[in-house]
Image 1 (cartoon, one colour):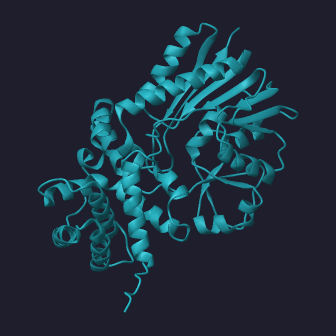
Image 2 (cartoon, one colour):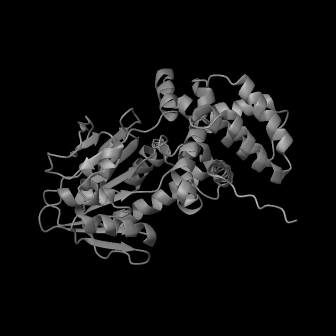
Image 3 (cartoon, one colour):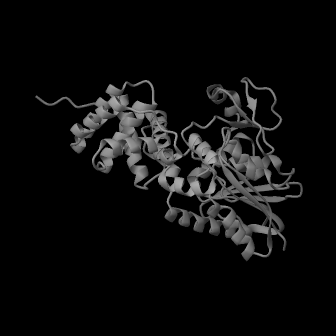
Length: 403
């Protein structure tokens, strides 16, 4: 008689996916967003996302508990499974600890670690403690070490509390819209754009989203496009444009007849920019890959890749992936992109450099070195937006080319 083939249920698929994601993210093979886009089962993507977000937001506590309960670190695959099961039990509703534990034990059989996983999880369930709020436990060690030197204890505690919290739902309404079929609250944030927070489900189901009159975005994203003076701009370039959120804001502020070029190296992500432009009836250029823009521009926006330390509520894995070596690598890339952006800026033109990082090496230090070595550029203004209850963190610098 042939053995009956095991068909995994939804709960097993979700836990297994979260464990796989943790392993891939920790090994440096992808980010949390990359894993969800490329590897997570489509049917259970949202559930896997919720579990992984809970895991990385509370990883400091989970790691400390795992160290307390084990004599030596488990093998990486087993550790990833344990962290996922512990996060599911401690921070998610809808599945009992016993059920989650049983599924984890079943999954651990392929590693011949089912007895070990069973023992650890039983102890965790029996001795489960309240998650600590001490920044030294909440924040990843390297981040805590850096931020402890920069921030006062009260500010550090605030950042640690935010790290464990879920980001608010926010969006931008197309200018001129006053009446909607859902209620919303205008946020008191810097920038020239109206951001609102309301029932996410009602907003997403609204016709306004389908018609392109809403763009789901954090308020901090408005800071960089709001810095320049658009009154005399004729040609503008968004150098790292995808998926097009900042390009849309620039398009709203540009004078009638001005040209906008949205460029990004990623051809796949630029499809989102094209779709966002199409929804809004915009005919501006969208370029990608090797199709670099030609000429010079009155306004250049360079919102460059970064360490993401300012957007940790949406990408909590970023703080756990952070390292001094990777910081050096990203700063080198940022310097290259700022040089590229400067080459596209016309004499008398404006250049906006921005990141969603709050690390000085990627922001103040980098721009100060750039200005010191480029006498044709002057720093007009700088803005640092720390993460808060209603917003992510961002750093933006407005430069002007004098000649």
